[in-house]
Length: 145
Image (tube, rainbow, N blue to C red; front, side, top):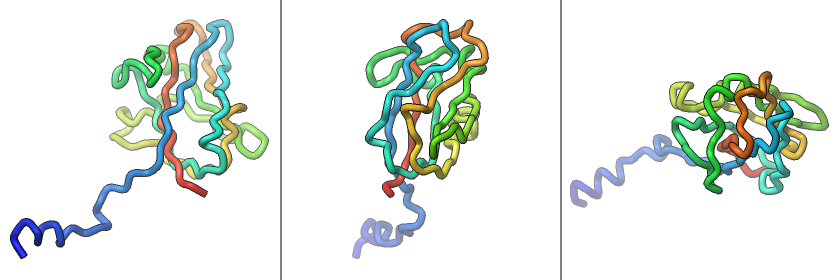
């Protein structure tokens, strides 16, 4: 066995980075006259254990996967993510707490089943900094049930 082969054989599998399933989810600001912006239904995330959420800010990602501009930084300061679980609003998180780049590279850990995305939403304490057609972009990490 050569030197290169030995190095490959000595890798400890427990140290290999584990990549979880994740989905990019965009939430478009359709009106600047309202503070509450509902997600569209996310059928591909039904019956999944949501393990973490990462919110992408404009400074790190300019556009979403559809080419729409991300929400501006001033609006993020006044924003909250509200998750609807088991028939009611159970989790409210400041958007700023979900930004991996601002949290030492860590995603916000969760352990939630059955988020009803069609009733979940982003809420803004002030709508003055919102821009119509900009989007909020989330990475939703999950495990299969």
